[in-house]
Image 1: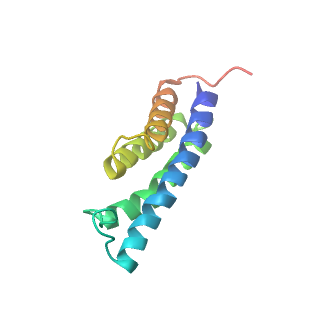
Image 2: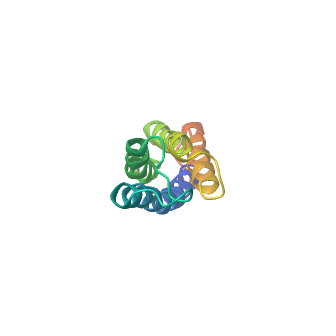
Image 3: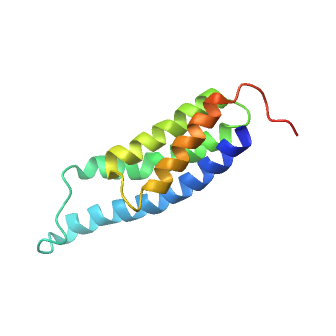
Length: 118
């Protein structure tokens, strides 16, 4: 289960990084260039989007890196990443896989009580 948490956390973290690049880039673009009609309006809380764009992938990849040796902190980090993505970006077509993979990886890391057999 720890290896599954590691793999899911890495994949979820990379996908969260892609979502984060676009989220951070969008808020910066609108802040610098202004709104573009109804299409390019600024989000309600750009600082939260920027913070989640930065922290969620780091939490996910860090949790994945810890999954084999320290399963409880790894599970907490992975679940925090999933919650951060959900709170900042909501659940949509772009975030459903990072949320699901980080969340499942967190649950598997917390459920792993013994080291994986080799």
